[in-house]
Image (tube, rainbow, N blue to C red; front, top):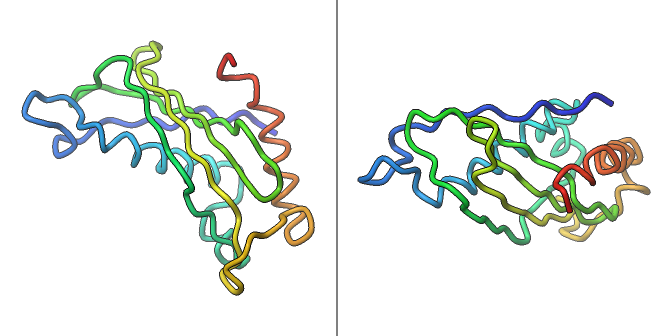
Length: 146
């Protein structure tokens, strides 16, 4: 499996506050954009997962700001799978500006059936998707320096 190169992003003006600094709420959206992009890169865009009858709700999210991002900055958002159990999936995110780490974050998710609204064990119901997440977890679990 090829390593995901990261999600490049240039902040929009509407994402700033009066000081030209990116408003803190936008980072959570950026995490989602990167998460959706990495799934597309891996060959399982969200549309495909949803067509399989699987939803991936957010259970929790956090963000730590180390340095400000401004309108006009170019950033790279790198999502890593930090935990995968077959029913749950956790991501860690690192945002870089000029190769400097400026923001970190996490999100926690689970897999649920659209039909039953219950947890789904991917190993049983979607073995190919299960294998994809296991492989990507193994590929990225040591990337965040933890």
